[in-house]
Amino acid sequence: MTTDPLLLTGEVADATARLLHTAAAFDAADVAAASLLPRWTRGHVLTHLARNADGFVNLLTAARTGEPIPMYASADARAADIEAGAGRTPGDLRDDLRRSAERFAAAVDAMPVEAWAATVETRRGPWPAALLVWGRLREIEVHHVDLAAGYRPTDWTDAFAQRLLHEVAAGLDGNSEAPAMVLRFDGVRQELVVGEPEGAPTITGPAPELAAWLIGRSAGEVLTVTPDGPLPTPPEWI
Image (cartoon, rainbow, N blue to C red):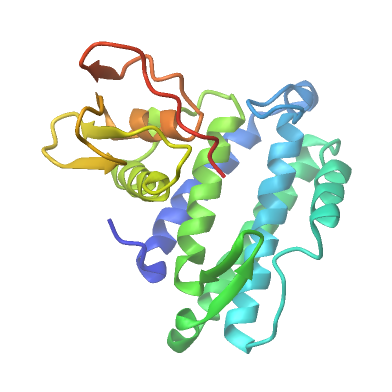
């Protein structure tokens, strides 16, 4: 389950192609329809994904040049750009999404090996540049689901789902708002523990379903709880 940026570029390209394939079917009514995200249409999600790619280009450039370039000019500017772009035509949204993805790929290709060791400043604090490609892959895959256009967590690759599950579980461990639980993949002996395992329920299911439930993209209908009881309520994910 690597997060090596050079090994993940192919996965980003494949995920981008799937996203563009979904967006290619949208007409004006489709892009104006609600997404799974509160108050956002599909046009908002597509615009966010394009601006997110450009934000990652900024961070890659900062890592490569050493200049303190922020991901976005400001939180207000980010929100304004998404709002301004959400109402565009399906063709304009697709072209923006494609071109921004190409800029991201070019920025990754321009990175010298030593630049991946840099630390950059994201919206949520310092981040290793080596995780930026993983961060972009995560954005594409999760927000593809948010388009509510037939792409579901079960369409995630096993490698992506397990990476995401490990990352989210690690983030919950030590979070005082997170309930104690043991996460068990179907058919896999490995367990992920959040909090104190003694007396904690064990949640079992496929890795994509476990990950989707933890990040609020699934109600966890196919998951099982041992001993029998309700699913815990994870805290809001980033």
